[in-house]
Length: 289
Image 1 (tube, rainbow, N blue to C red):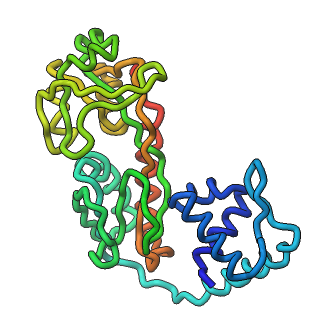
Image 2: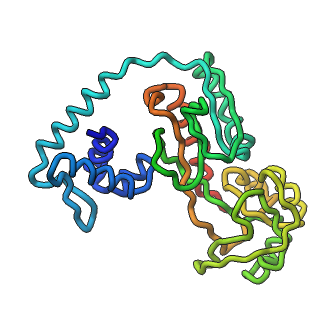
Image 3: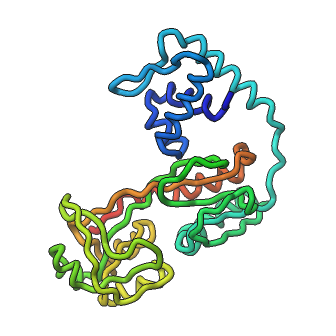
């Protein structure tokens, strides 16, 4: 019996939806659906009844679900109490390593003074166990893998420019003709929605840099605009050093914390993820004033 399938099924029962369960676990809904289907095939009968509004326990499966909960509790009880870690190796994008994590380290260190945090900025999706990382933060949809994941508040992007330049960006055509700063890595160009209508343009590139932090001086100087994470620029927006270009909206990119299964009960790992959630949450609704 696949216990990740049992966990997925029970979470779907509790939330009433395969989609909600997938979001809570941090995997595609197809993964949860496959796990549940394989578990039902293994048991030989349907456990979840699919409805137009989600899922609910099948009529004949009430006792099965109760027994599965008992089995899962028994399995979890078999794990030995973990020795607290003394070193927390974190990998994330270079930008997050530079702009997001340093601000939460003092409070984390106050709660876990015995833990040394090592942060590495890297854009690759690393195999955490094989690479000896304890925690990773990654944007985008993730494949099913040998680590656990937790969905985080999304990091929305804003299109920002200096006030005098933003006033001139009143159409897609002007966006296409005005210089942009790009951060290295695909895709190039600008894809978004203009007042709800999708568009894609290839503006002239004034500079291509390794991080948003390096790009911001060019933006503040009024030489170009950029699409940047809200959490990175909200203080500049509040200070009116840059403004959001109105009418442009980007698709929300999923953001996840990933960690090896052996760390599922590590207090320091969970606390570090909670600290990142707290840092991200205030920036979710950032808009120019």
